[in-house]
Amino acid sequence: MTRYTFANLGKWAEKEKRTRDAIVRQATNDMITQASRTATGVTRGGSVREGYIPRALGTLAASLTSTLYGSTVLTQGEGDFSQVVGSMRAGDRAVFTWTAPYAKARNYGSRGQDGWHWVEGAANDWPVTFKLAAAKARAITG
Amino acid sequence: MKTNDISKALCGRVEDAAILLAYFPNVKATAELKDATSYLDVTFAARRTQGSGLDVTEVVQEIGIFQVVVVVPDGGGVTVAENYSTDIAKLFTQSPVLNLPIAGGNIIIGTVDIMPGFNVDGEYRVPVQIPYIANQTM
Image (cartoon, rainbow over all chains, first blue to last red; front, side, top):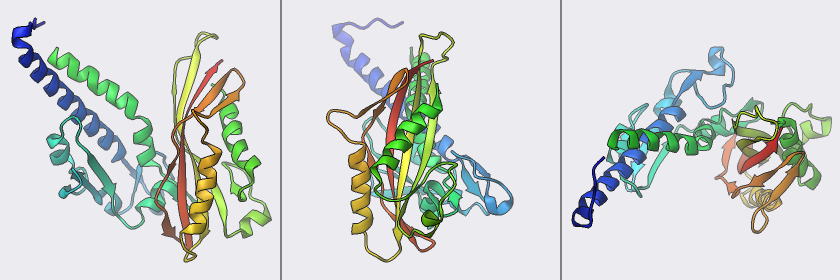
């Protein structure tokens, strides 16, 4: 393990900053990966599977947009959130949205159909996701 | 972890408040509920358990999101739905924190979120999400 002194405090601070950024990117990547999982939709003969996105033609899953800082849409498309996640630093605000017109109805539920709750599933697991990402980053950076 | 205790405590609080008729998980709807155009749709949006419970004195935690969706007819404006959703949020809000007792433990309620409403199939729906942590010894 590297020993830091007051003289090289700046190096320690830089290392900690890189570690924090790595944790944020890993945790966010893992969370959106989990939230992006798909399962056969009801119209294709499947049944409601909580925590998954229903898939028929793939339009809903492909409607994921990822935005960093809320000002520019950097990426769009199924699984294509890597550019935003890769650009994130600790303290950044990133927004991930499924923009298909029926996305809310499928996630929260509607009359006669239970919600798939893929957003809530990933959000509820966030503390565990973050902890695992932190452990991974610490193991790598020491 | 006795999931039944948690369901009873959370669903029971909504039922006792009698804000609107409500669909509860796996409960058959009455004829009156089926005819209702304004109602609540109650479900558990996410649930996970922490702690093995192998030792009878160990506290097992269930961490989840309890969801109450306010449903009103489409085209009637947002105020009606927002009033109901505020009533639901108030039901699960207490300073400094709402603590519901259950057998062998308690349920701590987090900050309630009223999500943006949306139109679907002639209805306007406003989800109210109630995060909770239930602690219980087996």
